[in-house]
Length: 216
Length: 96
Image (cartoon, rainbow over all chains, first blue to last red; front, side, top):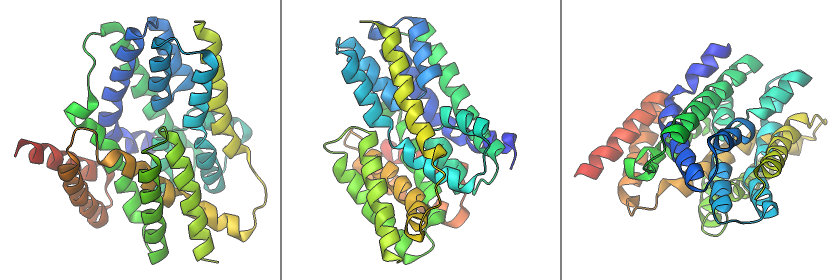
């Protein structure tokens, strides 16, 4: 389970990530961000849905505090990923810092689903996504033009299908299926009122709580 | 609007969230170990359902394509193949 294995394991998701980054970059330029600013968010924050929300708020001239709070709400779910990943993959202090900087839904998902036990594999999945996200951001920022609509192309569908592919092999017992059903329905309901990352955090915590309680 | 202070604050809250979980190294009671065992299952399910339907009134064919992809995932456990079949089915059903 080396770096290159992790890097390759992430490649099927590129098809979904690239159009998303392209759309983000064009939206950012339309909102008045410079090319350097557009790229800086991808390099420094590296969080797709938070970046798209932020540039939308920038474009409407919303205050900085609201932008930062929205970013926090959308991204606080990563606490859960860190706790879960830190349990199964041994890491040194420095590896924790680098691993945390590049942590995403997708890297967490692929690493846990593939039973990663080594940091290089995790880093491979993370760098794989970071590279494609940033290269496509640059292309979108430089070329600009018409905003590609991932939903019209249908490639936004890559994400739910990818996480379905990661979920199915984990469903071994009835309690696993129960947890997945409850968390899935909870997230679907919460998503009607709350922004992106919050339903994942809420449904993730309540689903895992239910599982721990059912197996007491 | 000053971009850079906001960008750095966004970095701080995002990196902070990502690092906090990785730095937690307490000895956990059994209940919380089981809790963490169920986190991937609950989180993956929660990442699927809100984006499954889409916003273009294609819920029906997206559910059908996801159902087929689910069967492929169950039989093969192959990520790339599952994505390929799911996407191909979605595009084909769109044409019909």
